Each structure stands twice: as C-alpha cells, then as structure tokens.
Length: 381
Image (tube, rainbow, N blue to C red; front, top):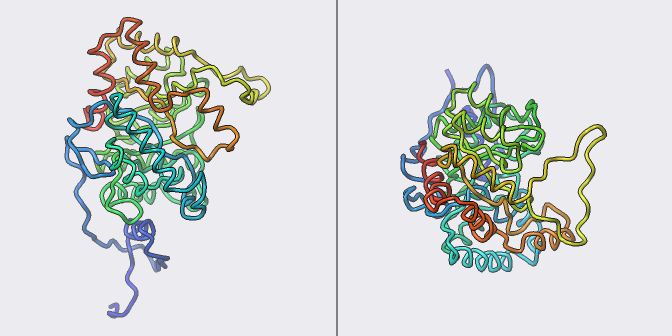
C-alpha cells in the first residue's frame, strides 16, 4: 500500500496539459503502467456552436467565413524570444487590425487561423487582433509538416490527448479553446509522424466533435486521398474533414474527394497569380519530374463552377491561405509576395467571387460556399 507522501502517477493527458500550460517540468514515474487520474474538463463544444478566440459563438453568426488563413506564420515562441521582430509586436497588432477592419468593411466576418503550435500560434495576439478589428477568428490545434524532436517522439494517443486538451481546456494556459484541428502532410505516401498526426487528429475529432482541416498538396501528390484513407480507417466521417489546397489540382482529384463526402478547400488562390516582376524563380523540379501544376485563376474558377454544376456547392469552401505576416520566409521575399497579391486576405472577395459570378455562378451558390458550407462544416453536417 502506497504512503500518502509517495509521488502519484499522472495520466499522459494531465501531464501534457500541464506542460502546455507552462506549469513546469514533470517527472513521470512508471513502475508498471501509468495509472489513470481523473481530472475535470470542459464538455466538448455544443452542436451549433464554434470556439473562437473571443469565446464560443453560434455557427449561425459565422457569416462570410474564409476557411484557411493565417495572422502570422512564424515559429513557436518567436515573439517572446525576439520581441522586436517585424518592428515589434505592438506595431504588428496595429497593422493587422487595420487590415482586418478593411476586410470586415468589404464583407469578411470570420476566418479560420489554421496555424497550430509549430507555426507560431499566439492566441493572446490573435485575441487582441480579433477584439480590436471586429473580425471573428477561430484558432487551431494540430500540427503542420515539420515536427520538433519533442512532438516527433509522441505516440498517437499522446498527440490526441494534447489536441483534445487544447479544444476542451484551452491553449497555452489560457481559456482560449481551439475550434478546428489542423493536419498537414506533404506527399502521396504518409508514414512516421505524419500518420500518427492524422490518426491523432481523427481520434480528437471523434472525441470532441471538432472538425479537421488539412494541408494536402494535390498538384502531383494527391495527398488528400492518402489522408482520406487514414481518416476512414479510424472511423471518422468524411463530413468532419475539409481536404485543403485543392484548387490547384486536377479535376478528377477534386471530384473524387467530394464524391467521398469530404468538404474541399479551394484555398490557395494567390498561387494562381503571375509572379511579381523581379521575383526569384521557383526551384526546378527534381530530375525526371514534370513541373508542378500551376492553374491560372480562370482555370481554378472554371473547375469550381464545374463542381457547382455537378451539385457540390455545399461541400466547397473558399479561402486564400494568406498570412498577414510570414517571417518563416526571407524578409527580402516579402515584397514580392505582397506585390503578387496586393489584395492580401481580400483576394477571394475582390477577385475570385466576382470572377465566379462572371462565369455564371449564382449569388445563391456563392452564399452556399462562403456562409452555409462553413456553418455545416462546424455543425457536423
């Protein structure tokens, strides 16, 4: 029989939660199995509600929602370690608030910031920008492509526990809860950390009711099909997942994804624009490979119209995958990025939607893709 002063065992979820909250380093003693320890957690988000950085809101209040965006694409902890980066945090907040106020004036209500922990997610910064701009922001748990050694060492169960903690309890020791799970893979074959990540996301989604959005290159790799196979092997309904980055993809790939019941993210329109004058040329493909597909804006819009005509408007979500700041790339490249897409986060509203209308897409179909599809995505349609 253990004495009162013995060190008690902690569950993996409890340990990860405390680490995520910055409480300190915990030593887990295991002399034959980790004992389960119950802890109170908040209930999963109620049906018809979605977590934003300012708290849960009814899905009916999402309004025009961009499904795949970023406030700042960076690295974990960079603002704390390098507070003067990009002119400083306060200057960046002011600039971002101004940009989002303009976007709100032009019709934007909500966007999903799909930058998880490893892409520099800073929920306090997101909270302040959302509050001051009036644009609703949904934060993500999950992971992007390149795991740190700590994350790479985690099991499926540990990753799922971490994602669930950020959904049910909060992020970085705050009460700000994730409203979407981000999954990222980069090839046609998924293995190692990538597979554990997809499986963990599926399990967290089933446990909490929170949907998943993906980074899924499709020009050659058709990554979404490999992700779908794993999601389905975990028993996750396709209606809980948006397969992202599908606008620069072959039409047969897009049709196969929606026929399986997935939402499809048409969400990288800036890559359809011609490069800015003087921009560095992209790296050539490896020997023996053809250059990646590079569909123009009109080609992408035409493929969207074909899906709408086939009856799939309710599974299409539009976005830009635009980052208000992107310090993960060289500073010198930023002026070319902005020159290529001077509309920034407003590209879908200013260019894509008008072009869809010119091609004969109805206002009702536009409303379905920008308002109704995101609402159904969060409701578990």
